[in-house]
Amino acid sequence: MTKTRSRFLLTMAVLACCLSSALAKPQANKLPEWKPAPELLTKLSAPVQTEYGTIRVPSSFILEKDELEGGPAYTWGKKARKEGVDQAIALVSPKLTPEQFHDYTLKTALDDLIVGYQRAFMNWKQTTPQSGRINGAQALRLHWSGATRKRDVKVEGSIFMVQMKDRFVLMITTVRPNDKTGMKLTEAAALTFKPK
Image 1 (cartoon, helix red, strand yellow):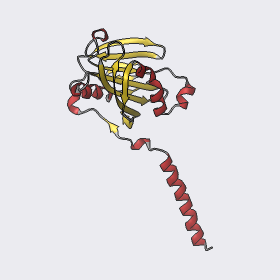
Image 2 (image 1 turned 45 degrees about the vertical axis):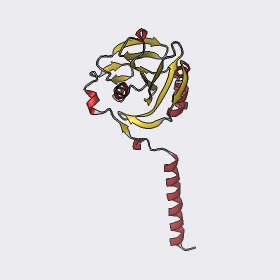
Image 3 (image 1 turned 180 degrees about the horizontal axis):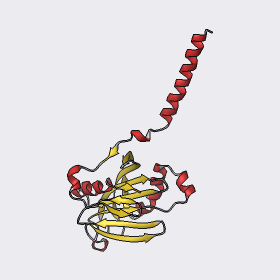
């Protein structure tokens, strides 16, 4: 075998290794950056500070804060929860040990951490999660629908899972069926989230 031919074969082998390695790993920096529609930003508040980062919520929404084992859960709604869900966005970060966080991928975290939420609804349906970025942080989003178990009220919304350095942040939007305006507004709020 000539030197030129063996150099060529070696070069091709190295190139094949590089290509297979690149194809095996999704390029996180190639993910689309999700941004809220500019015309909706005028309907959102100034950034609100939470334990997990900042978020802009619809200006008229009321905040209800609960202390959970993993940290505070924030829910902003067009009405107070006791008056019934109309439009809402919730932000929570489930408690994970460093080992659990290390073992999770964004997808397995999403699947595991929304199980409790799914159980609160009948006839749960969801779309396949899409990958993207929210203010530079890797995220997944899906749309869901169901009916509340207590009152059999149909609702729908979106779920966003954002990966931070040491935790996952879950944002859940809820609106009544076919409330396209509410869906766009609550999703726009979720897309303003800036992790700490």
